[in-house]
Image (cartoon, rainbow, N blue to C red; front, side, top):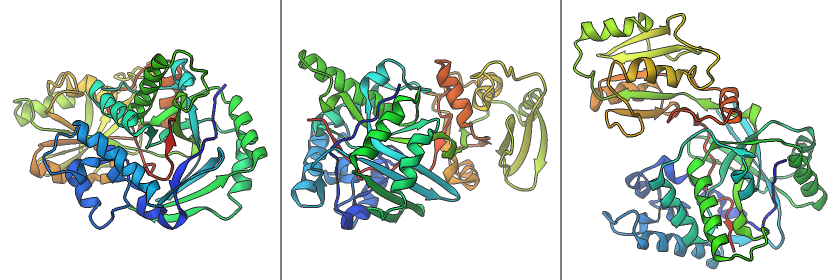
Length: 412
């Protein structure tokens, strides 16, 4: 049984939605954020990366940054940019981009669903990244960015989506990257009840994107529970902002790898070692793998098509048979000496949204070799999460990204 809960959203008035909405905080660095906010004082980046309103060089984890975030969030309401709903509602959020159309329901997920495993994870989180968002959520007293959840579709929920999306939307605008964002309000009590009941029949929810945001929201809730031993479970801090998407509509892009050096190997030795793992062919064009267990490699201005040799993948091992796992186990660690891709500075990762040309560019700038990957599938993700296992780092890149600022969930 899964929980979705209607909430009294703080959200932009219709005329301001396109200006407020912004890409999530974790897809840009501070320098990029400062550029993005130029000429747009309403951008939600002022909340999610509030250092843009402080002098350059400020400690990103200083009290001043979190205090500024809370100040900027409150300002959106005080200045009439955002409204607060009178009663709890749900919303439908549709994104269309490059042939992808994903439709989700915006509501609040349960902290207890996370703790008891109804909400399933497939990634490990880093304590430092968690701590940043814990402080942000706690200081702002709000979830400012939604968690991206996936569920196996349900006819009951589909019926409400079909009914509401036939009506006029509340928001409809194109954002950065040519993404069409459309939002409808579910304010009919019977429709809200139908969605709520529909999710009670959904066995599991899967975190597609936002593991650190989810973990941070849960830890803030646990902190507040400890401070309020008489809590009932109905307080807003027991829930966190999420968008629930039908799994069959979601798109995972490739998550490619870049290496800083060849671990001291000569070209002859390098290709000899790679030849033990792959069948290799030169390519006169960039290689975008078209099937599992195939890879592209760019090295010294030449692309190569790589196919994993027979017998090297154990298909009974859900995690071990992932292409990202195989590349790490058979290539990155034994050949390039990269034991822990989470911490080794000699490896970097580039989401497929940037294209294969980004791999070529980086190999001419600061790296020497790149591997292009075939995307992990959502079926693989859910199978691994169902088994209670964890994917290697940087296994999935979802696109389009959910915008922040369209919905804010106050914790008190």
